[in-house]
Length: 242
Image 1 (cartoon, one colour):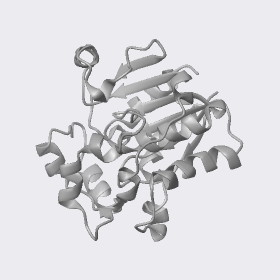
Image 2 (cartoon, helix red, strand yellow):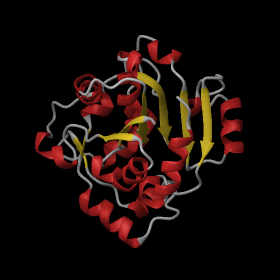
Image 3 (spheres, helix red, strand yellow):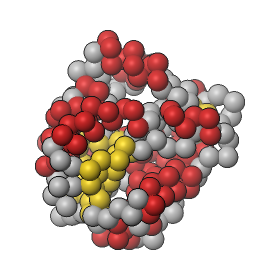
Image 4 (tube, one colour):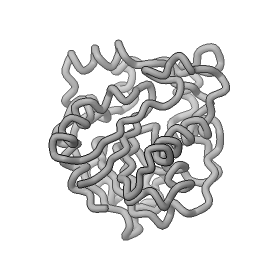
């Protein structure tokens, strides 16, 4: 059986993984869904002082204090940056890092530049927090909503919390240790043939994924598969080898 640490993307908390967690645990796996500082059940800790280091420490702290090893670390969407840095700092605890519609941020890059600086700055509130962006606006920007029910959409809008933008503006600092780890991608936005072409073209979202340590899978559904395809996502995660 496998130990999973599940890190949600922007605006979400551990609650977002509930259906995936239930399925993985029913199959005998150990699962730790994580809420990053300033979000969801930790929203009372939100503030302008939260940085990428804060969210990285959330992950490494869980790994350390629960004494987790041989972990599959799962990062959804905007969690790609803190999960990558956390894996780089604690590679001895990570068996594989899996990105769900996400990817690693290169050393020295600010996550906001991979997310879309204009999108973030357009919606920024109080100079430090990024409110939930309506799903219809996400769709207008090309984000897939396939499979999301009205109940899913209402749940996301109701429970989403402002995301501390300081976690997006601090540059990523890597030692290179994360480069040695096996990695996986579960792509919901792009089919495998399109990913192959983008890798060949050198698209920054898929930089380095021609490395044999990468295992790439497709799960055609919305950008939020923990809501639109939780069973399929759990099965995909369980299929990754350590």
